[in-house]
Amino acid sequence: MAVLFLDLDNFKIINDSLGHGVGDAVLDHAGQRLVRATPPNGLVGRLGGDEFVVLVNDESDHHALAERCTRLLDALTEPIRMQGRALHVNGSIGIVVALPGDDRSGEDLLRDADVAMYQAKTRGGGRHAFFDVVLRKRVQRHMDLEQDLRHAAGRNQLWVAYQPVADLRTDRTVAAEGLLRWRHPVHGPISPAEFIPVAEESNLINSIGAHMLRSATRELATERERHRLDLTLNANLSPRQLDDPRLPSLVQHALADSGLPAHALCLEITEEAIMHDPAAAARVLETLRELGVSLAIDDFGTGYSSLAQLRRLPLDTLKIDRSFITDLSDSEELQVIVTSIITMAHAIGLDVVAEGVETAQQLDFLRDIGCDHVQGYYLSKPVSLDELLTSALRLPTG
Image (tube, rainbow, N blue to C red; front, side, top):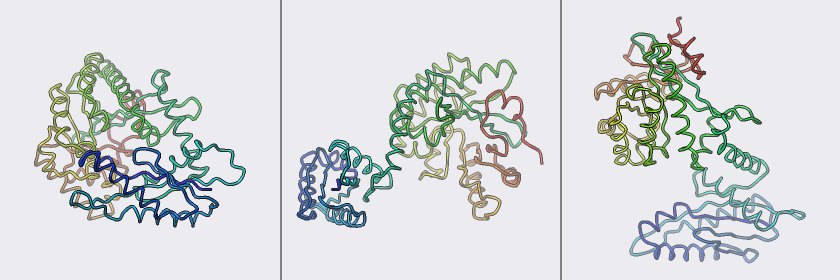
């Protein structure tokens, strides 16, 4: 048999905007359509909320099941007339196939089909995904990492690496971006590209983000005083941290406990996080600015903001995303775009950092067009603070 786990995409919007009465009516229509689109050898049930399950007997062929999912989704997407308007709903389907001898319980099959459904959602929704051994291993690793990440800070497995930011006018390092790293006792170094999404999804990002900020401010404050350095700490804030009402207090206490001057801390917020709710983001940024820290928009060019929108935010720095820098030397189009970004950013009073600089040619071009700062592997990969202080305070020559 096959279990098809279906969840409506973005159904919460209908409930929130039109009310639960309309939402219940939409669920009723959706259920009826699924029943009509299911052959006699299938059974349709609603688990709860906007989750439905279709059981298909005597079927294991992936092609046939994929076609069945297409028919189910086509039936769902027909407009539903409600309160004088046409509502459009779609869904995501996870599929698990149980062959003879499969020892999974019904609960196990529903769990695996649910996992596959979320895989379909991560691909954009409105589609299906099959559960298989690879997905099971990926989900198991995800669960294991989430559990281990809950204890990583307390067990001193998390540490901060620093990547230098150089001033193109002086060729000296003026800032260091703190980047969280995880040294797992069994799996070794875990890539941030893997564990940061786990932290975001499980809501652990606030606690490990706070740990990172406390650690980095303490470490940099100690070295600034010991070596009499005028070095700024750049620290990233995730979208979830920006939504946390305790964030200003966290920043204030980190500065007070470490002794790092407020002007020596720059908080970096991604363009996507700001554009999610610009008005709310502006209020948080104003509160942070009142603490005396500086603010940067990170990964500029990957979202949908304009420099006109940024002008209304209390920002000091704009960081051009590395995707604009990678092919900079070989693309006249990118050269025009980057030059325009720098010119317009300067016009509204923002300093500019180019991320992802990896070659001398990129560096020379950025210097020629008036970019203020650069960051990337050409200067240094992220390293320990000791290594940064001994080997990465000046731009490489040549």
